[in-house]
Image (cartoon, rainbow, N blue to C red; front, side, top):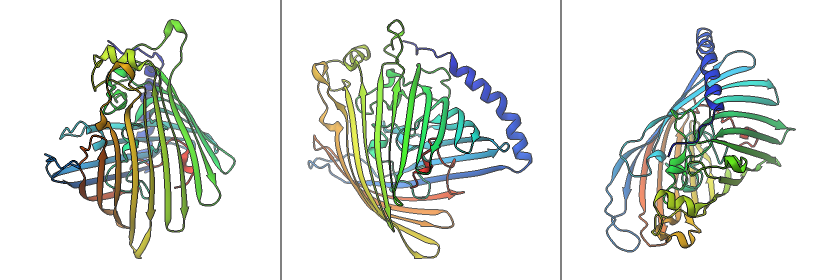
Length: 400
C-alpha cells in the first residue's frame, strides 16, 4: 500500500527551499543568526523485580535522552528562518539502542502584522506542548510524560502551512494545514506514533487540519486546548487505509503562584474504522488489535527555589494515566499491559551557566502487574537557553 499523495506540499517545500539559502546567507553575513541547543544524558537503573515479584530482566543503561541544535535567522523586519535538528529518546520507544537524528523544524515565517504570523515548512504540530522540553521552565524530569509520548506522539512535526495570531492581550490561536498520519505505522503499544511523517516524506499520506487556542486567566493562570484531525473529503475520495480519519485532541491548564506551579493535561484520540484497519494490518484476533480510543492525563506540581544566586532548584511530582488500546471490541483482545499508571518524583538543579542535573524516581503500575520502577540520574546542558526558541503554536501568550 502506498501513501495517498498530496500535491500541495511539494510546492510549499519548493518555495521554502528557493527562498531560504540566499536569505540565510545574507543573515549570516550581517550577524543576525542566533544559535541554541540542549542535551540531556541519563543513567537509568531499573528495579530488580517487577511489581508482581517476578524478575524484571532489565539492565542499568546509559541513554542520551535528547540532544537538539537550533538556529534562528532574522531575514528582515518581517521575515525569519528557523531550523532545529534533534535526537530524542522518545523516538526509540521500541527499545532500540540507537536514537535517530531528525529534522524537527525548518520554517520560514512572515510577520504580516504584530498580531499575526504566517509560517511555512516543517512545523511542530500545535497539539500538546510542542515547545522545547529542555527549555527553562519546561516539564521536569528526564523524560516526557507518557501522555505526551503515546497519546500525543511528541516530538511531532510535519510539512505544512500555519497562521498564528493573538486576540487582545489574553488569547493566542493557531490554524494549520499539515501532513496526515500514515496508518501503516499504527500499533496498539505506541498508538499513532509510528505514523508521523518523516523529514524525507515530502508528500505524506494526505492532508490534516490542526487548531489551537490558549487563554491567559488572571495574573497567574492559563488554559487552552488543541486538536488535530485528518482531512474530510467527499465520499469518492474518502481516506484509505493509509490515511484513515484520526482525531487527536487535548486540553491543558497551568497555575503559577509564587514558587509553585501546577499543571494538568488530558488527551484523547479517536481512530475511526479501527476494526477495518486492524484487519488490513493483520492484527485481528489477538492482543495486537487496535482500539478505537487512546487517552491519557497528568497532574504535576513543581516548587522553584533559589538557594544561591546562580542555582535554581525544582523539586517536582507528577501522576500519569495512559491507555493506548481502549475500545477494541470484537476484533481482538485488550492487552492489560497497555493500561498504565505512573508516579514520578524528583529534583532538578539548574545553574545559570547552563548545566542541569536531574534525579528522579519512576514508579510504574501496569494492569497486568508487569510494571518496573527505576531510578534516573541525568546531566544536561543548555546553550542559549532554548533549542529552537518558542514554538510556532502561538502559545507564548499563555506564559509558562
